[in-house]
Length: 405
Ligand code: FDA
Image 1 (cartoon, rainbow, N blue to C red):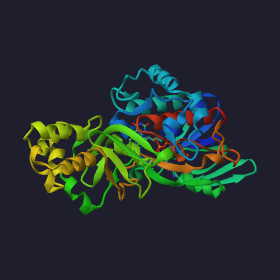
Image 2 (cartoon, rainbow, N blue to C red; image 1 turned 90 degrees about the vertical axis):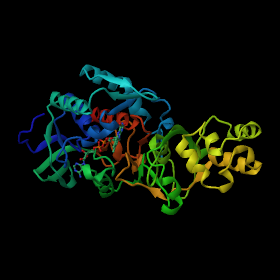
Image 3 (spheres, helix red, strand yellow; image 1 turned 90 degrees about the horizontal axis):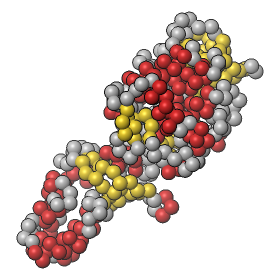
Image 4 (tube, rainbow, N blue to C red; image 1 turned 180 degrees about the horizontal axis):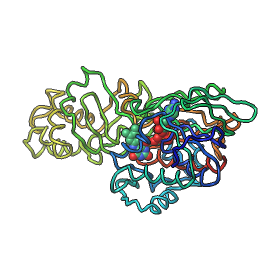
């Protein structure tokens, strides 16, 4: 990538050198577009670096571009269909293979690098190099204005003109590594609607006092079935749950958090696939074990121990427990209903749901109603499930846009 003082006129300026911006600049550059890529952060693509626990879960093999609503949410969950159909996980895998990056499949179609996320950053930098992309970083954009011929940008490295501008500044998650509301402000400046952003793929928190009995379980993880919403809005996941000091996390909770709305209850089956009521009724006729020990067959012993502390009627041998107490215990374990007080916020959220309203954008090119102004990646109201879906949207939207520049 060239870092020389660049001329002040470009075909396109891409603002934000994260996953979407890097890939968009690279593809456009390789198609012959004269591109400038700018980013205000000191370090390049920090979010890719920390992604997937440092290994970058770069896509998901289970993504079905014909039915994106299965793995994406937003006011129009099918908006992303066109871009995802034209650049699939297999296409990105081919790029990764071309660069000789080793990877493996983990859980439910999730693909991770074998080494470090740095491999993917280097790959994107090399692709930008092949497209002769000019790259200014750190460089902040103070002002963006449209004139008849295109756009004028006032940046910390001088004035730049371009026919087209691509906003790839991501969402609000993890402010300490450079997240900003720049993209939403630019949308509003040009009269484009923004769906109110909110933290997603985020741990949920509970009232301190009510949570106190469970705080001791911090660090404990177990497979559960979790759900929220009613009828057609009902959403459920079978994943691992993690207890934290302030509430709940783990893949089950991160996934459901994107669908959870304030005030709504969560319902959790802590022993999925087990008929706890039937098992306890049978145990009553033949066992003298403490109820906590019976429960420990189906849930971790620490949880069983904490669980029975909630009711004195549960702190006795199963054969001495009343039928009603056993039924209540089974019911509560299989359908634990609780209302989170909030989320851990953008500090911990993996993504930001909401964003630039898809009704303002072309699903083919990602160009907005404001001619020559494009929005790609997480800044758009398209949010993927945990598991590589958000990166695949970044790559696919970047490519669709780059081909139109
Ligand atoms: P991204 O956030 O990547 O890039 C935006 C860029 O814009 C940044 O470089 C920022 O500095 C720059 N910028 C912001 N404001 C600016 C301004 N005013 N001026 C100039 N530049 C500005 N997804 C996935 O699919 N698999 C995974 O494994 C993970 N793991 C993961 C872990 C963690 C901890 C987080 C926080 C997130 C993930 N994600 C993920 C989500 C994924 O990282 C995210 O969806 C993509 O990085 C979004 O790509 P974008 O390019 O849109 O934004």
